[in-house]
Length: 179
Image 1 (cartoon, rainbow, N blue to C red):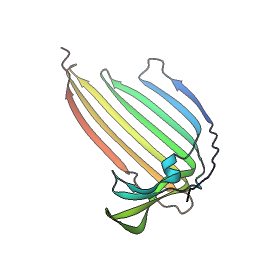
Image 2 (cartoon, one colour; image 1 turned 45 degrees about the vertical axis):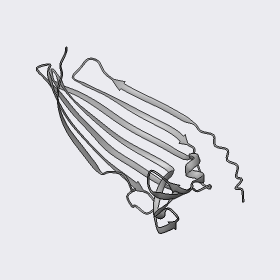
Image 3 (tube, rainbow, N blue to C red; image 1 turned 45 degrees about the horizontal axis):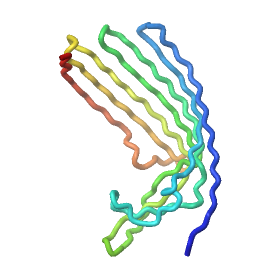
Image 4 (cartoon, helix red, strand yellow; image 1 turned 60 degrees about the horizontal axis):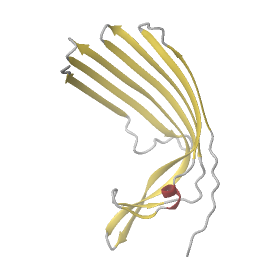
């Protein structure tokens, strides 16, 4: 049988920001964004094996568009001549957030047995903090330290969102050859 379903998605986006940077050691910017995102074709109509993930995905043709509002604040501080610290804080509220959920079902096919995932929607918020410190040393070496943390929560059942790493950190040291 042929599935025939009509969708008419119309999207809106707006962004406003305010920043301060007067060649001072401290600068910052605030941003507020509002956007709609229509479901992708695979989120609506997937019905089978996803080769690269070795799983079966089932789309949901009843998905509505996502409506999101995001507020963010970024600050930059230059406490030393060749170093700076950047900190970013954000809060993202998304109504009808589209995400892929594992089910308890395993489906047997001629290619093998695969887990089944389904597209769902929920009202969620995602909040986080990003940190970056970089320091030049003698114009030939650079030290970089970065970290980020985020938390995504389903507002209805207060549970965490899957596939969102809660904390990530990194350290780097590099040599810069100006030749």
